Length: 266
Image 1: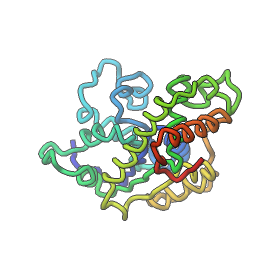
Image 2: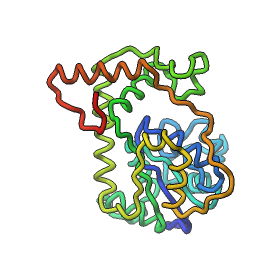
Image 3: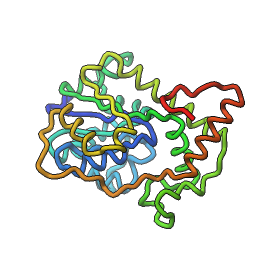
Image 4: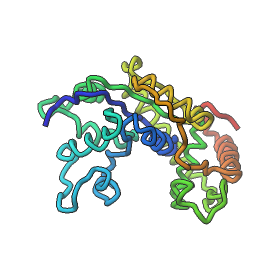
């Protein structure tokens, strides 16, 4: 196996409920920007749907991410000749395990590992300005097991969150997790500003085609004449999610915990 990828590559550096699935599906649909998926999650890598994407037959046992590296590279660069992947912060160790050179010092920084394997690397840092809304979205998905609008077929648009109870402790746990992931990416990407494009979920939701065109320009992908279309996923949060945000921010203030530190306010 070669230890340097010869082509262009980009990673969407993200966290849960930041719009990464919507963005990845839209990028895949263009046919020009690789096939970004969450390849580096141990809970999914051996499941049938991801095996199908990787074209791994049932008789091939999963042994390690490095051993499946070439499957991942082939799948992620299938369209457009560009390798792409979505990497949640908590999946970063598996991503580094996949691309770290066998002779590399274990103390080598994450950026050096990635740039060592992908000399022509670009990074998209996808985060959410409203951390509390992100946390509530994660809490709702866990509570209802509805992770996108296609899975909530029995719920009307904007009402799939109705099955999630307001629970300060559970929402606060997701807030802390989101803050930790944001800080983790901030530290990981320090020094890579020249190859990193920040992108807020709020901007993605407001104008998806514009966000994709910005990514094309950042990565160096020629846009085609085809219109950029969303893949049929709808926003899940409704009035109840907004109300839970109000309740959480008020309770947080009443407990004397201070502001969250995000860019949103009650």
